[in-house]
Image 1 (cartoon, rainbow, N blue to C red):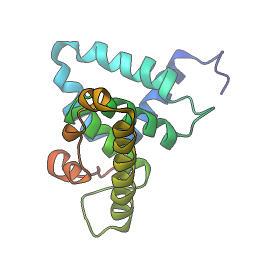
Image 2 (cartoon, one colour):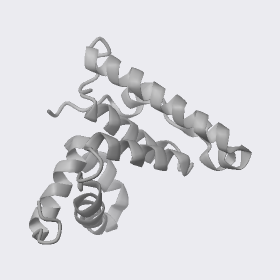
Image 3 (spheres, rainbow, N blue to C red):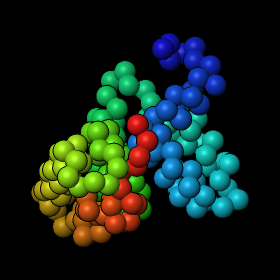
Length: 159
């Protein structure tokens, strides 16, 4: 896709495809967007068109999985707490193939193992950088893979 001649409807569609792959339509439209109240329409446009349509759907350099990994690590290290980090932890798992909530599913077990490793690796970097970064990142508030099932009800049922 020519990045300089992309139609606004194509940008929106690209953003919608990417955001659904990460959050899943159910979580996005039933839990995330509604929390913005009367600002929902504005936030939805900004997220779908600008954040996801223009930026997080441009896979010319990074793959979708690499992009989501950068987003998860960045959000986690900002110390924002459970919400956004949990959504993106789930998104990483979804990009690794996890769906549903059956813990016996091989895709879920594999995704959870990878995500535990990612979290431990990033926490190691935070520790290496030092105490000030540790205080700001608040690693103790980061979600665990088990929180996806407990808090969000699983990895989503959509394909």
